Length: 337
Image (tube, rainbow, N blue to C red):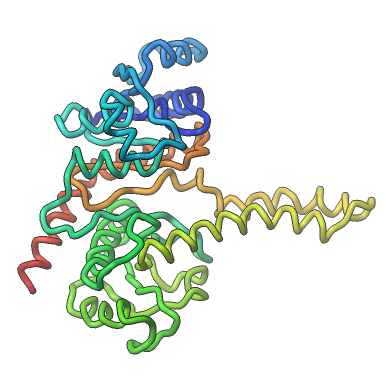
């Protein structure tokens, strides 16, 4: 059975929200996977006792005596806290005791621990974090979302390969369209980095659709959007702020008189349904691609629903052998050079 380690101590609402989400995931697992909650055993058991009908669920506990706080320096914390929930979970994955790790904890610590413990896939220049974004007809996948601020053209190409493989196997799209985020559609547009990357993309077997502009993202012009982490993270944060701003603007525009209140009451269900496409809880977490394993970095504010979705995403990565497919494609890319 597939076993997924969940950092029970990571996140703003840990351990209660993490444990609740893990139980929800385990209840709908239908024998596909087991959840291993990693962290302070006493605190985790106390949370488990608050839930009914836990007995019989595929949930177990692995003790970790330390916890890396959200505001700690990742490098220092990993050195000083070798028995942290993040380090223990990654260690279990490296040793083959679990098949994937999910954490809503300190992002830098999760990245550092994964790179140090799991190691990079041979040939991968830099692992990258991806994130889902909504568009008119569904979702697209942005990579890199913040782990690599300065990138070489060759790294952008690898991001495209890894993102394409992930999207293909997780979203069941045979030939995902891969676009290079730029300030214009023409090959000669953009900075030196992007201009140099364009012909490299054309030489690969990816379904490369060329440059796409920011306005093309929400219209669904590409399934996988490639950029460096500086641009990607800025775009993600802007999207989050947009989702928070829209309800406020709606209330302000409609007004507080009787007609406005009635209008708000009538439109609210449809508007809430529309806003769900911006809700990070719908998409689980951000996969770290390019390491020898399966790692999902969930949002620091993750609710039980977000954790449940992240665990399901991790299971699919394992079940579809995403890391193995990435290793194969990166090896083939080196052979073509």
